[in-house]
Image (cartoon, rainbow, N blue to C red; front, side, top):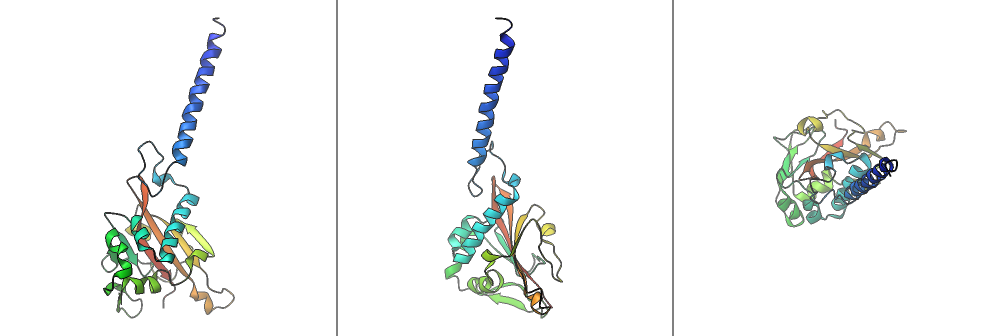
Length: 215
């Protein structure tokens, strides 16, 4: 019996370890990136690139469909969402909205100043729907040729400062290319970047940035 005791102890340890591993796997697969996670579940900050891209693509579909109520549900409840019409984020001129304001975009006819036009320096004065048409979903980014996760696919002549302004951001760059065979059309590229920050165990939208070549 004494000779069997060590083997019984090892067997028991193996069973306990198996239960713990199964529980960990279950906790991970039950994690919701948009729902409130329990403290014992993997933090949102540890989502891998594929999972973050899936989150961003879902948000992109809300934008494409004009579902501003759904978009408000994945927006940061305290900081809101900053909308930047250019690659250079300037908080002093960019417009930000809280979730309840975003939910009302479809019926909001207010003309807001969203920033400054590159080159002319004139204010960008548009309603929310007009802004989304010109500086958010101006192209079908759901068909983006290249997607960068925490990576800027292509830069123009503007300062890229998304990570400086939002040091805790993780972002997905949906990039639509120009025609590289045509030097003129090659400048027709553009990117839509969706930035997220962790809040309450979930990744929530904090920045919507539009980037393109500017004169």
